[in-house]
Image (cartoon, rainbow, N blue to C red):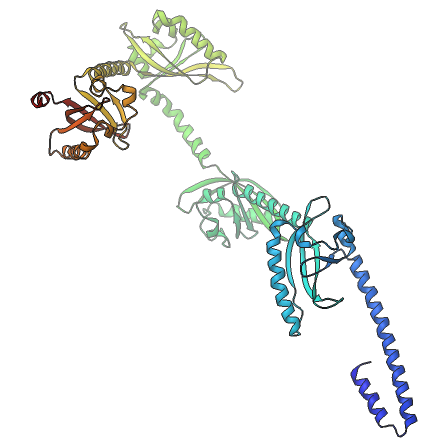
Length: 556
């Protein structure tokens, strides 16, 4: 019975004329109150049955917890994780969730609890907070849970509990992750495909494109998205009618291609393309997926091939290397002018002759026949290199460095041995002279009377020294090459010595006076003449140390 109805009964009883009337009214009011209470109890029981049915049959996980997250009640849905409600009652939820989620959840619960309890005291509307966490099933497998928590008054006494409604989103999350991975894989395959791809609507407005398409046309896709390719100057006048025809076919749901287009790049250069188009659905709308292959090089190659055929003979004749082709019997099929000049013959005197019998010194003939047969049989690398002499008309031998291969037709049948050769006679002679000079210089270096040291200019590590350096210091060459240049001098003269080197480098003095500290700690006065040089892009210092014999004798 509500307050207004009670007030009406009070007023009626107060206005009754006699005691009996008041008693009747009181009895009637009491009966009405009992009737209302019975109805309220029935309604409460009905609500309780309804709430229980919802709680026990919902797929959501419902739990009532203390503020310290101790379970007080769990609905049967928690059995999906392998637990009966009785197994969890009395345990703390915070101890069971994933360790990485505990700190976050504690913060959420603390923040929310303070906020909620404060709002309850002020009789404000209920405020809930959403959070996610991971919870293990009985087998130990982690499940992703999406939850909403609400502090509620404790029905069994003072204080507050927390009502948490959770939903298992593991499969949903896994599906979303797979979808995301699939989208990422598709995007990666699209972006990095070796063929240019673009997407446009059926009117020619750009929607998307990949990196190869950007490379082909010279535009970034962001510069074209939302623009019509008829308006941006991509198409040549010759290509416009074909593009219109293709879009009409795409609008009718028909694919096209391959079709050849000539486009104008952003930098103004023209490119030749083969284009295939496919009408597809994207977000419910028909769009065009285009595949673009850059055939500019192929078209250029076709044109170049025509020119090359006419220039081949001129090229062979002007080439500064020998071009030689022989058949399986080593008869000459082709030789260029350079080859004829080196041999001292006319080309007509060489073609048709046995190459090995006529133009190779006797001592090399058998070896070269075997070499050629190994090339033919595949026992040697088809792009092999060898060196051998040829015999000129004057009887002179010229050393030639050959690059060799075997030419076969489409069926794999032998066509010819093809070789390009360079006369390396003078080069080999020069290399020999350089080697001999190097040997002489090395002998002079090692046998010089003065001690010579070489050091890395940057690290000051000793990198070389001669025999006199070993004699002067008493150290072996191996030991010296493990030392720094600074270790050759006593510490008390090192600064003065370094200053002297700097002055010498500027041309202020000719020699530097210093001392060398030997293995036996003996100090030897020396004069040093130093200079810098570069070798293999690295800077080195060379110092020639001469013992001050006269000064030493004078001091004695």
